[in-house]
Image (cartoon, rainbow, N blue to C red; front, side):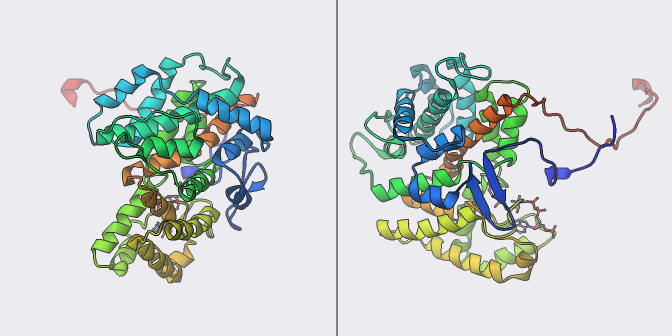
Length: 393
Ligand code: CMC
C-alpha cells in the first residue's frame, strides 16, 4: 500500500483540482472564478453570482433572464412535500428539517439521479435546487410559528421572494425594503463558495460514491450545522447575548476562551486558512453598519461585537495565533435586523453556499480522473490476537 502520511483534519492535503474559488489565506483574498468578492458583492445579485460560480462566466442579460425564469419555474414544492413540515415537533431544528427535506427531493424528482438533469443540464438543476431550498427554508419557518404558508411569487426576484415567503401574512402585509434585499443579496454572495471547506468536502466525498446530488447536498447541510463550521453564526449571537446578560463581562469570556482546560472558544474567531482578516468579515461588518443605520435599528449586540473584536485584536493570545473575526462574526447581526430567528442563521448560510456545493459536485463529476474518496489511516490497535471463547472472557 506504500507509505501513508498522517494529516489530521487535512491541514495540508489537496483532494482535487478546482477552478472555482481562489483563496489566499495570508493576504485575505477571496475570488470566485477570478473575480474578487469585493467587486461581486458591490455589483451583482446572488443569482448572477450563482450563475458565475456554476458556469465559470458572468451571465449576459439573456442568460441571466433565463436563469431567473427557471428559478421561478421550479420554486414550488410538490404539494405532498408540504405535509412533511406538519410532522416535525414544533421546536425542531430548521437545519435538521432542511437536510431531511433536501434528501427527500430525490424521491419527488428522481430523474436527476446521476450526473446531469435530462431537463436541460446542470443550470436547470441548480435553479431547481436554489429555488426549492429557498421555499423549504421559508416553509419550515412558517410551520414552526404555526403561520399559513406563503407561496413563491413569479413577480418577485430571488431575495424578495424569500423575504416575502418568510414574513408576509394574510393579515399583516410585509413591505419588502430595498436595503434589506440588498443586504441579503450581499450576504448570500459572500457565502456562495469557499473551496474545500468541511461541508463542501463532504458533498464531494459523498458524491464521489456516485450518489445523487440531493443526497450529497443533504450531507453538506449536516456538516454545515456544526458550531465549528456554519453553526458558528448562531453561536456568535448566543455568545453576544450571554455577554450582554452578564453585564458586559468581556474579560470573563476572553479568559475562558484562552483557558486550555476549558473547551469554550470565541465563536466567530479563527479560521483554518485565513491567518489575517477574513475578507468576507470586512465586507459584512461594513454592511452591518449601513443596514442598521438605514433601518434605524440600534442593536446593543453590535456594540458588544465591536468591543469584543477590539479587545481580541489587542490580546497576545489571539495575536500570536492569528485569530481574526471570520465570516460568521457579523452576519448574525444583519440576520437579526432582518427579523430572521437565530436558529435559522445556519439555514441562511446553507442557502448561500448552495451554488458552491453544486458547482463543486459538478466539477468533480466532470473530471475523468475523479476517484471515490477513501482516506487511509494509521492503525494503532492490536494486529492479531488469539480468539477468546465466551466462557474465558
Ligand atoms: N477561540 C479561542 N481559541 C481559538 C479559537 C477561538 N475561536 N480558534 C482557534 N483557537 C486556538 C486553538 O485553541 C489553538 O490554540 P493552541 O495552538 O494553543 O492549541 C489555535 O488557536 C489554533 O486553532 P485550531 O483549532 O488548531 O485551528 P483549526 O484550523 O483546526 O480550527 C476553527 C479553525 C475555525 C475551527 C477554529 O478557529 C474555531 O473553532 N473557531 C470558532 C468557531 C468558528 O468561528 N467557526 C467558523 C469558521 S469560519 C466559516 C465557517 O466555516 O463557517
